[in-house]
Every structure is written in C-alpha cells, then in structure tokens.
Image 1: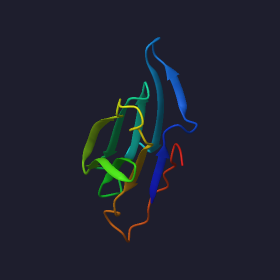
Image 2 (image 1 turned 60 degrees about the horizontal axis):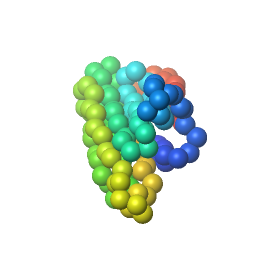
Image 3 (image 1 turned 45 degrees about the horizontal axis):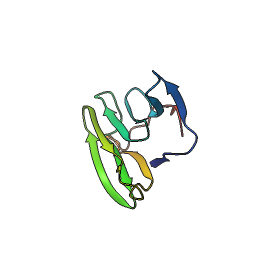
Image 4 (image 1 turned 30 degrees about the horizontal axis):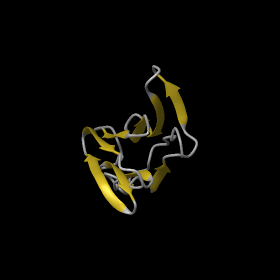
Length: 120
C-alpha cells in the first residue's frame, strides 16, 4: 500500500519560533512507518523506520517533484533520514510529494497483528 502526501494541503502546523513554521505528518506505528516535516516551505525532512519487531521486510519514503523522484530511502532494520530543498528560482518550484510504502511481509503466511496507522 502506497500512501502519499502533497504539501500545501491541510496538515498539522506548529510554530517553534518566529522564523520557522513546520508542517508535519506521521504515518504507521512504532515498528514500521514514515514521517515528513516541511520547514519554512523550503526544506523537507523525511524519515522511515522498520525495526526488528516489524512484520515487514522494509519501509520506504520517497520525495518527488514534477513527476521525478528526487529522494528515495529504505529502512530495513532501523531508521533512515533525508532532506530535499525547493528551488529558490521563481517559477521552478512545482509540488513536492511525499510517498511512503511498506515492503512485503517477513512471513507472508503468518497472521498480521493489528496495527493502527496514526494517519491514513
């Protein structure tokens, strides 16, 4: 299941000081999930985690813009992080899209424990 988030839509907001405005979203659970934070509409910090107790082989996050992948990271046993930046050239921006997905189940015939996503 692939889940996407297009920045500019309704997200969670927090203000940490007068210079930084954050939009952030968290998906999945403590064993396998992903998150994205937009800082000042210029930098996007992403993360994916997949720990040993996860029923999945991996968790991936992807940032894309104008149909092109600009960052792709996969966590197999632990956490991966990465950042992308918007262009500061007028007219070159486009929409930054955050997508995440989980890999196959480690044991595809074992029953999957119930996990609730924080966001769909």
